[in-house]
Image 1 (tube, rainbow, N blue to C red):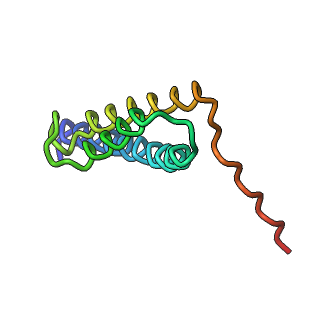
Image 2: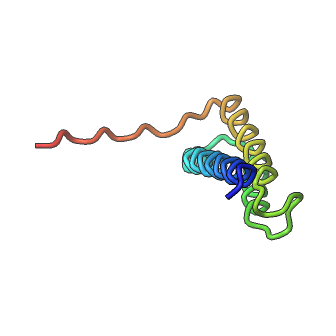
Image 3: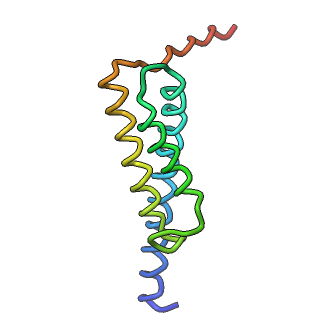
Length: 104
């Protein structure tokens, strides 16, 4: 292959790796947000924004083509930020995780 082709492949690999890392981070945040949504005291409009962002993420109609997930990630990050600010203002805290028993 030519040098230019290897450069294109390298750039695409970096973009795919960055997208996968962001998707992993968002998955962890999504699980935490789901726990927070169960907790009382969060306004309904913030829950609607969050679930609307998830619906947009799964919707086949996007602002940018599907291989580029930047619009989906951006919408979900904005919804998570809105949810986090609602949790902070309501004073809600995530439930404490149970410590694991020591292994024998």
